[in-house]
Image (cartoon, rainbow, N blue to C red; front, side, top):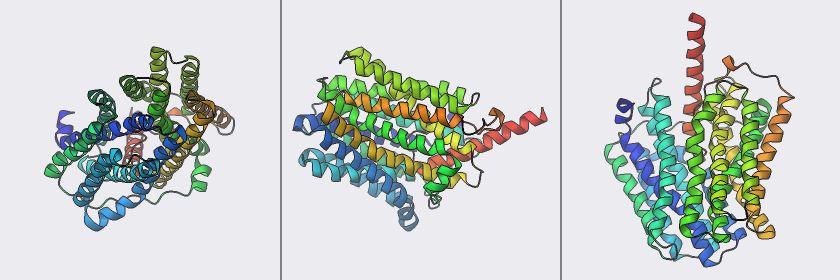
Length: 421
């Protein structure tokens, strides 16, 4: 593993710094928005702006890379993102924040595409799984670590926004000084949603609903914590627990995924998510029960994303997987745009604890649809399914395509080994 990471350590270090800055800004929006007196509905629009930009960046960045190369695109997007982060305390208006979030989302998506292209090029067929796993772990640790950094300053000042900007700027150094440019990124044109739904109804509907869940957790979690009166440190801990759960639960759910009917596992994980949200709903603000709710609700979200990708790949041919990956990322993005808007308006109407109501209802919808799909299509034998690889919801189509190709290769190799035995 050390030998594998020796060739990509600079990229991974840069990604950790970027995620520290981006993770800080996600929570800061909720904290500073509360201080500025923004409503839940206004902050929901601000949150959705990020995912509009993210979706746009995933589509346009490969074109930019082909025109000017990885290094220039990465440096330009990193600089723009750094400038955007430092502008938030200077332009404390909901409309300005929405524009800035759109810009940051676009830059962040483009950075992912660029970095993941480098990683994919640096990996071989034998090391790709380990490299992608290390990349996902680096992202998650960066987000969790960012919450700890938030306790070092006051969200009412510009200091934390400046800190986030500095971290993003620092991330450029190890990457740009050590990475060799690679050929332009090649991302398949996303599959039409009608074709994607025809091939995998559960994968398509499920990943759209999961986009709602992920964006609500990451974008509105801090808003919820602020509105129920948690301190800044408690809000940071709450957001950290959402991602810490994902880090802990990814492996056991992935292990089960290669041994069970994935629809049953999707159903079970969604039920656990719904139950966790119900616990959050009835706690009435009890701190540690809230943390437990966040741990399990966030803990099943990332594994569910990887499950939907793996399940969809099971239903498609190897030739269809690249286009399907782009279609799934696009579908997830649409859900991520809609989720915070629904949650923000519901919180405005029913109060802050509607945060759990929307999350729980969405998890419940995933569980019910998975149960319905079990009655419509026969089970794929476990030995005919693709291997599971934990992919974060923040991944660009580049990483999703690479993970799908690796999963197919691994599954084929395992089947050949079984036949020879």
